[in-house]
Length: 557
Image (cartoon, rainbow, N blue to C red; front, side):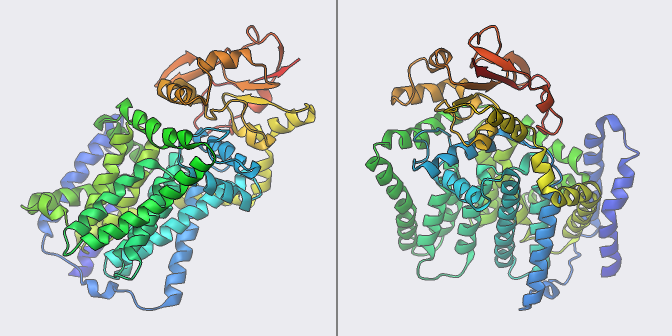
């Protein structure tokens, strides 16, 4: 009987894929969701007492087996992360972090000469990775894939602990995480990915049996996470709650506190020693607090986020839907759900990841990377019932879709790395500028700042990322501590760097506007010659193509 039920569950995904083609196409997501919920409720009612024997999924001490599984994760990561490698830019934040990190080679501290909003550890990590790949941008992208793979490996071993050594649960949960990270907006090296390296390691240590320096290390590692992305301190709270609910927590909390304070005291001392404490505190505290006050995040944007999975990969959407259904089902069945949640670290971490998104307040999808991580982790602890079989069915469907739609592109891109790199438009533009042999090159990049990395120069402006000029709280905070002049935008207009790269128009929250930072046209820049850059404005410049965002390049006469 179990075999027949398992076959029913495994066949659900491909059968539902066929059914969905007959649903009204104008609202396919809504109708598919409604029909699927009906199906899953019926299956749970009919098969509510069916559970598979989980003992056979307990891991054996087979090293070869583990190596093969990790190799599978590596292949899955490379396939799902490199299908867009022929696009030079996915997200401009990454370019800004690279430019800021290049100043470390010149002996400067993070934010000393080039300002970015993230913590100093992120800048040092970028510098380290760029050093390993000798500054090659396309190899840097591959290095970020390997970082994701490393996080997936840590995730896998954490899942083994959470699931009490159920190999199958752990493999499926890790596969879900890798597949969820295959969305176009998730294939860049965001600060959230670098923070996850520390968060995942800290949770793995927390889940392990007690040892001498366990809680000190948990505090230390989470401190490093906050020095990548300040808001990740929120993920320490569920662990503290877990400790408070056990006997004699005081000693453990004290060790976490000591571990957490050590890196922060070290950086405070270093910045104070170099006369930059005001820079450090403003970047780490004042500006992030102002950032969270934007209050753009809302439930509607979460709905749009979910729909993006439906449009990107049918299977991923329904994997998420099944997990939501399981959580809701547990809530309905458990009268003490809220009280018992304080003992459920994985659920608290999942809730914290949503809280992180709403506190960040800007509706950026990369703020939900933590959510993708922890909702995948929740799968590790599920029982092997019809819902889990449905998850497996849709995971297999997702892998099949990924292989058929992305596999060839990823394989082709990885085989032609050098050719792709040479064809990157901004890299070619940088070579064009270098051929002009401009003495003591100065570049004000108000857009397309990856060009600075290729040219090996810092931005003429202290602020690296162009959109940060549009945030009054950033300008005000930096003006108050004397890092930039009063009325900084006008002061930039009166300076005459040798090269200016910018765009005349930009899209701000869905509306096309004149770029408000700088008068980016020949009529205003009378001392400059405009260079024709049409040949560089190609389709593979930017994945999220903005037809209004032309490359405007000016060279001083």
